[in-house]
Image (cartoon, rainbow, N blue to C red):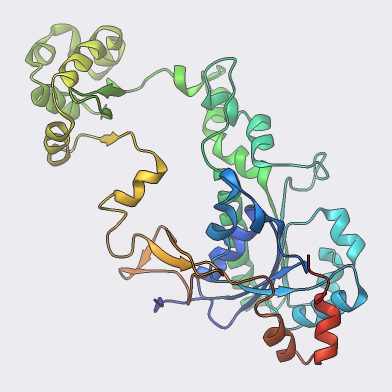
Length: 394
C-alpha cells in the first residue's frame, strides 16, 4: 500500500532515538517518503519491550523504519555511525546533551564534520536555565500548568495520551522541513533543537494570554467559566453518555426545537446568548431532563443533519468500530516482526485526496537491515560484525 505523494523521497534520515518524541519525528519524516534508518543498541531499543500502557509505543511510532544495530560503546560502532552520517541528510536524536557529547556526536561536532547535515535534537528543554533537566511528558505537563488546567482544583491531572511527546515530534519534523527548505537556498546544514517543555508551553498559551490581557487566571477546565449556553455531557434514556453543544443563538434555537423545549425559546430571560449563558444553572438541568427522555440513536439522527455539535463518549478501543475511522484511508495495517498485524492511523491530512504514509508501515526486527545498510556504505563483513555488536545480543 504505497502513497503516490512522497515529498521527501530520496532523503536519508538516520535516527537514534527511543520512547516517543524522537521516534515520532522520524516516523513523520518517513511518512513523507524519507528513508529512515533507526540505529539501535545490539540488544534493541528498550522501548520494544515495554508492557502495559507502553505496549503501543514502539509499534505506533516506529512504523516503516529500517533497523541497524551499532555498539556505540566501541570505536568500531562509532566509526560505523560516522559512515552512515556521511550518507545522511538528517540526523534525529533525543539523547541527553552530555551523553551525546561524551560519544563524540554533539551537534556542534557533527555540524563541523558534515556541513550539509541537518541535526534535529529533541530535548526536554530549549537552551536556558533548565536545559540539562530530565523531562518527561508528565513532568512538563505539571510544570507548565497543563495538569492544573486538566484536573479539578487540587487534583492536577495529566491528559490521557502522550500528546506532548507526539506534538513535540511533530514540531521536530516541522523544523526539519524548514531546515531542508533553507538548505535548498544556502546549501548548508543546520542544527535544530525542539523542546518538550516549550511544546507544552505552547499548548497552554491561551490561558497565559488570557491572564496577561485580563489580569485574572482561568480556572481548571472542569470548573471553567462557560462561553456557551450548552456545552455539557448528558445521559440518554438508554443510559448512553453524549456530549452536546449549542454555541450560537441559532444552535440554541435548533436544540430547543429538537428537544421540545419551546418554553426556553420564548422565555424573556433567555433572549440573548449572554442571557442563556448566565442562566446555565437552571437551563442545563432542563436540557438534561429532555435528553434523558430520548434514546441515543434518535438524538444523533436529529442532531447531525441539524448541525448540532455532539459526540458519544468513546473509549480508544471503540475507534476500531467507528465507521469514519474505518473509511478507506482511515486505518492502515502494519506487521510486527513476529508476524502479528495491527491497525493504526497515519498523518491526519490528505494531499489531492491521497493519504500520506510513505512506502511501508511495518515494524522490522532488531538489526534486520544492519547487513544491507552497512554493506552499502562500504563496510566489510568483519567490520559489520564488530560494529554491530553481533554475538553479544541478550
